[in-house]
Amino acid sequence: MKWRRIWALVKKDLIEFTKSKYVLSAIIGIPLIFAVLIPLSGLLPITSINPADFEGDDTFPDFINNLFASTVDDWESLNMHAQTLIMISYLMFVMVLMLPIIIPAITASETIVGEKERKTMEAILASPITETEIVFAKITSSLIPSIFATFVAAGGYMIITDILIFPFIGQVLFPDFLSIIFILVFGPMISIVSVELMIMISTKVKSVRDSYQIGSLVVLPLIFLIVAGMISFFFNSIATLIGGIAGMVIIIVILFKLATNIFNREKAIIKMT
Amino acid sequence: MLAVETRNLTKDYDIKKDGKRAHLRAVDGLDLAIEKSEIYCLLGPNGSGKTTTTRLLAGILRPSVGGARILGLDVVEDASQVRSIVGLLTETPALYERLTVRQNLTFIANLYDVPKEEIKTRIEELINLFDLPEKIDLPAGSLSKGMRQKVAIARSMIHDPPVIFLDEPTASLAPESAKVVRDQILKLSKLEKRTFFLCTHNLFEAERLSTRVGIINHGKLISEGTPTQLRDLKKDETTTVFRFAVWDDVIKNFFQERNYDVLDINPERKSISIFIREIEKETPTIIDELIKQNFPMFEVRHEYPTLERVYLELVMSENLPRNQEEEES
Ligand SMILES: Nc1ncnc2c1ncn2[C@@H]1O[C@H](COP(=O)(O)OP(=O)(O)O)[C@@H](O)[C@H]1O
Ligand SMILES: [Mg+2]
Image (cartoon, rainbow over all chains, first blue to last red; front, side, top):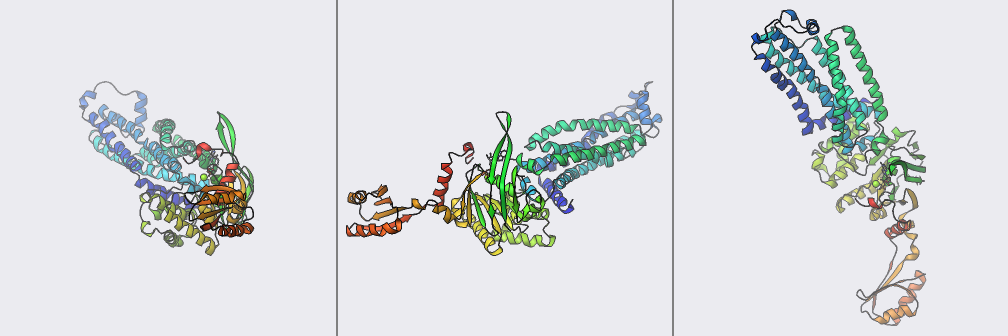
């Protein structure tokens, strides 16, 4: 692999992203929604409920109490109002983690199918760059905006959430071990899987619009992956954590092999015309 | 060593015909041998396989049968090296519209491993060559179609390739830009000994530029030679035109009485065109006689068959093109 060629392609893609109104508004707009709108609309109504309304003999089911007791300090000593706020905060954090799925679907469609649609791909294919280098570069360039957007959105979400709920729970909830692992490790890995799937789709479709449509279907199962991951992490066992990461790495490697096998010059050219 | 050499070069596309899978033979047993610093023009109607041929030779499609070598390198075995020594102007060359001309060219230069310190001067050279210096830092999308085409041609030469394939290079250019491109091609081939392989249906261009012309139809090479050799194929179809200051039907009778093969009589232009079997021998005799008869003759000229006529006759005689529906979309 020649890094110079890969970097040239990545850099070109990134410049194009910054000059595309559509991609730019997606990379900036969607994180903004996740960082600001979601915590405000999800938490504000609950913070304004009178805590007294929560009082009573009721408690959450045991399994929920067990789940949170292992992650949140002094879970048992918090009142139900505070406990509800924490639960909602985590729930909505899962939504922030949809960004690493959504953004690559947009960026990968734009850069791979977009190049086919606009017929710019042939000049790349005529050059000595290898298929593996192309796939690797396209993964990287689709990934960078996603990681950037996820960090911004997650950071914003955490700050706003903490500010909103601190007065009620008396502790800083985010970032905790769980959220850091998710943002720094799990999120980027999900992004890679999402990009790899999009690359495989891109070899089959001719227009960016088709790519979005099929992409949005394929991407759905990934959301389950996130929710499943989140739930297993709640059990807070290092074994599940390492197992989960190892599983993701294996998926990433297999998909990379598949993507590089599917993506070849001949097909890219023939499907283009 | 030949610049381009093909042996039974053949390409089948998988297509769907009536819902069934089928093959379409786009290039059919091509044998070419092109010397270094030639300007070879591949002429052919739409759908005759020109674009497919350039893609095969540039190492981006694999031959189904047969093979090809570029400067001794096999297009399949040494595909990567082939790609780095050939330049390719694709049929629908697209630039990144949001990137500037310079960014477009720098990107491709990096893909070809052009030494970093040479990129800037190389780009400026090429941009000057094609007469676009004031456009270099503008977004490619803001350029006219013709300017973009010139940038694309410059792009195909960014890595200084010894062999250059240009697929319809002047199709979208205004006459003056087309001339700039033709002049540069001639210059680059003469001074720098580069080999050019052009696909075109511009017969004027083929005639002006090429050292040799290949005529392709249905993927097969149906004729090949220098423009003169090709024209000579129809040498015996040269016609002779006589024009007179005043027209008189007696003139017509003169030719008909002597049993000349009269092809056309045009009283309005006061001319008559005939077919003479032995031009060199018979023409002076006819002129002598016409003068003796005191006909007010003021012009005699031979109309040699043009490349266009040769081309059209060769292609038409092969029945109609297979892809009529594709004609000039
Ligand atoms: N990607 C493709 N898939 C199927 N058939 C193709 C493809 N590209 C070209 N063809 C067919 O191959 C033949 C030759 O096409 P092409 O090489 O583009 O001809 P030209 O450049 O001379 O117009 C045509 O019949 C065309 O329809
Ligand atoms: Mg063509």
